[in-house]
Image (cartoon, helix red, strand yellow):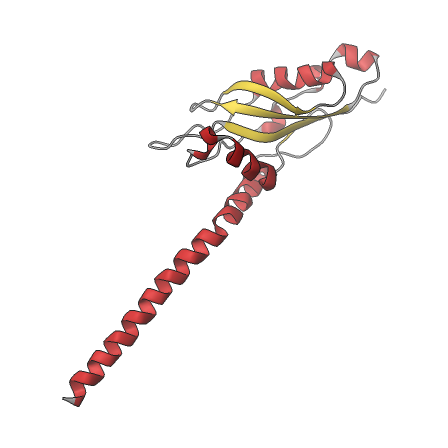
Length: 175
């Protein structure tokens, strides 16, 4: 009879350990999930060649803005993947600097949010933080609408609609 009691006790202990392991794994996944997503966005922007320099697009991994935006925008909560920029360093060239801004000696950083369709193309650009120079703000959205591309939605998933935190730093060319 004792051997059956011992086997039952071992079974109960092992079952309890397995349930605890599953519970811990679930809690860790819930707690770490947003941080992993930020890390993935950071890695994606680093590997895509996004380095801030003269007249180049920069997509900083601004996780707090990203999470705040998702909270405010119910459409973007229903998502499974974020659009990942494709070669953002190629979106802007020195020729995109507005001539009127050069003549006026205007420089600045423009931050814009893009709505992206499931194919990875921008469908709307909104200036989130102005440079103070309307010509630079308009040029930023013009450049993004013309050149910005993102990885489309993978099969069976809905792509995020909004990509927040895209910015261009406009620096006057050196003579």
